Length: 235
Ligand code: ATP
Image (tube, rainbow, N blue to C red; front, side, top):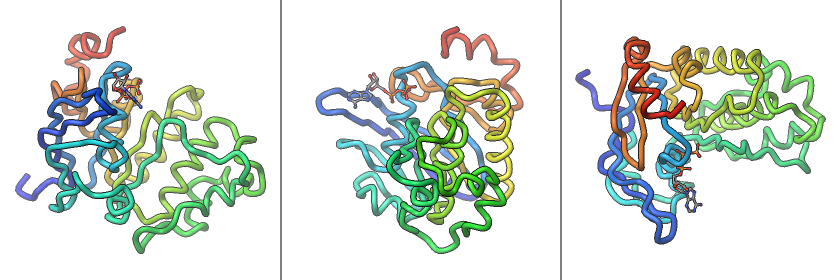
């Protein structure tokens, strides 16, 4: 590739208080790619996403987004560049309706999806518009959490374990959604424990271990690296 990556992370270190959890993460994501972070519990995948969106107290190194250094920027300023974060816990407000949850995040960039486009992508959301957030199934909550970010105009998405705890049929639906977003030009970093799912949606995989990226595997080479994966992910 001759063009600069959309996101370029170099020697990223991050801390929770005194606890140093990222120790020099390096990774690149090109525009339009779907890239996963694979690794065991506690490897530092979530912390990497939180560092990119700027919700880790202390981080050092370089995180360049579209050429702009963001490592010292506030999370609001980073969001305004068009980066959207869907946390593992999804963040659906139980006291609000589906519609209120959907409308909650402010638009950060022009070109966010309209409500009609969101209904087309997630028909369930339209049906459940007046339900309370927590009356939704886990899968519906995950879809709502993604839909909400698409409204904001973010074009670079950070998805933390969107398939966690969901039934296979819902996981397939999320896989189709990610594939569709990729076709529409979104760029995605996906944290996953389920590498079989990761294989169905991603272009490349970064293996994260003890706060570092220890390997990168192109998706086409994932099958021949199963032993390596098992060693890194545990069984
Ligand atoms: P998981 O799937 O469990 O979220 P992960 O790879 O995303 O795994 P992180 O959540 O990034 O891992 O955690 C990396 C390290 O940071 C772990 O050792 C974890 O215990 C620690 N850690 C995570 N959150 C905090 C926090 N709020 N305060 C202190 N330490 C934390």
